[in-house]
Image: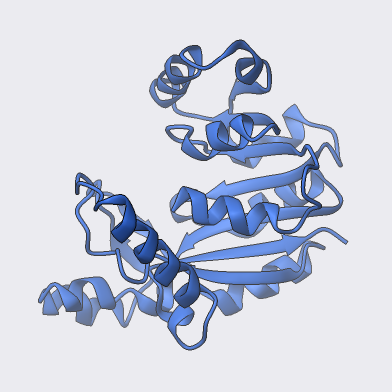
Length: 235
């Protein structure tokens, strides 16, 4: 998934351009490290000290040049105005974060503020319009029926969180001055795979990723993906 997102993000910019990236809620730092290895300057903002320590440990194993391109800050994604001036970044990543935020609009407005003109706001969310699919395909009919009536669901960590709808986020992006430029479905064919599943052989993995990428940009498949990747561009 990380490679797919990276390709969708960098496709917005000329090949070879070195980007200033803010990764809000960077988690284990997978996306941040991939972008730093590709030559981009990445700032990671994370509120969980344990997660931040894990990223620092991973970063310590990277070559010095990559370490120099990464800055890690302990902080909340809702407080970007405290840490950064307006127009600081070319790309802002908000992946797997909105599910924990009851009122996402103010946070997204703050993220749009720190984007430079023409900058990209990349948002990855659970798709509320497809919440019934995972439990339904697993034979969990009670959970599937509940998913038709609420955007709340229990994630794989056992936490009750919130999914988002494409239409609502499209309106929000327009309202904050970073209207939707493109959107993709993510995890159509792999959503039921276990977190600790062993990747298939390289040849099969290549075919799988090609199928995921094709479905993720093709109607009607992308509309029922487990996740939605929205790309808004700052006016």
